[in-house]
Image (tube, helix red, strand yellow):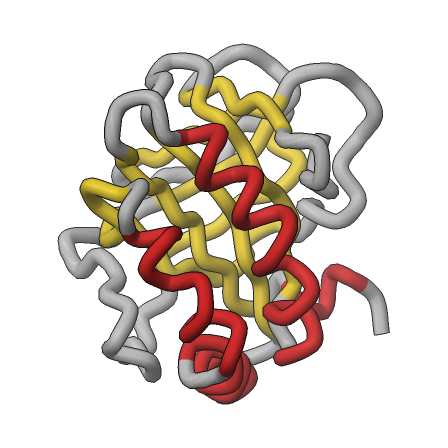
Length: 178
């Protein structure tokens, strides 16, 4: 198994938070939510602050398949850790429904090229530019875990690059993608 096994199904999650609460959510997230989600079968590629929006938290979670996604989300969200900390997490959020469910066009989240800067671009369907180290398109399968909505206003193309363009992401201390 390699980490790229988890690029079969990827969620790009963008949360709008209450003013001044982003660092509070990141601290809680990094302390309580990473290991239990990974133990359940998810892989958290990246946790980011948006440079353009001081109250936005962006993160990437991958799965081996849609079936594995359903099982991992059920285990985590119906389990004791989420039950214990969900009220604290939800208290920081205005909106957590800006979620794109994606499938790979070009894998590379787990083996990004060296360099500084991570940029994500979300666009109408198109081919990713050459500098993109990972590229995705909207996953057409139905959402197998409807308790967590995903956007249905696509389709979209999403790519990640080291070159400026799109949304600039600043990795948190525990982000694997840096």
